[in-house]
Amino acid sequence: MSVGDVRLAILRHFFEKFDCPAAAYASEFLSAADTYQLDWRLLPSISFVESAGGKAAPNNNIFGWDNGRAQFATPVAGIYKVARQLAYSDVYRNKDLDTVLTVYNPIGPYARSVKSVMQQIAPLE
Image: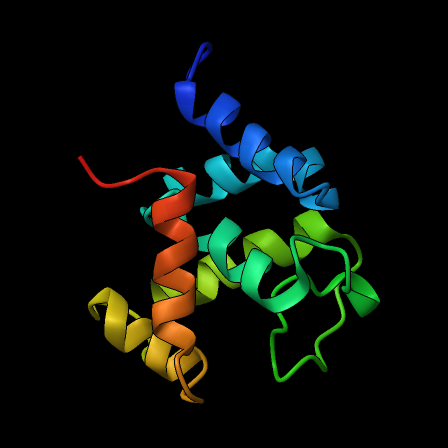
């Protein structure tokens, strides 16, 4: 993420519009996405679907990771752990977005929900 990165303002605005605690971690979402070469909208969107952007995040688990059982020292630790898993775990690595989201949560319209939030954050160009 570079100084003046427009994604930061976009992401903060999205979370602030819904009064989400995750707004405080906008730069960390972007840094993790860049580090692990993920779509910058993916992690924030999963957190929004799973915990309303940190509003319901026991044990700092804003992603509902491990069916909500995972515990993280901080939300930032969770951001980097989940990003690393999505990038390097055999079940996620080199998969398209639909497959990643189906593996993440195969129940109902989960993939569609996350992709809808991604579009709300920033539509594809």
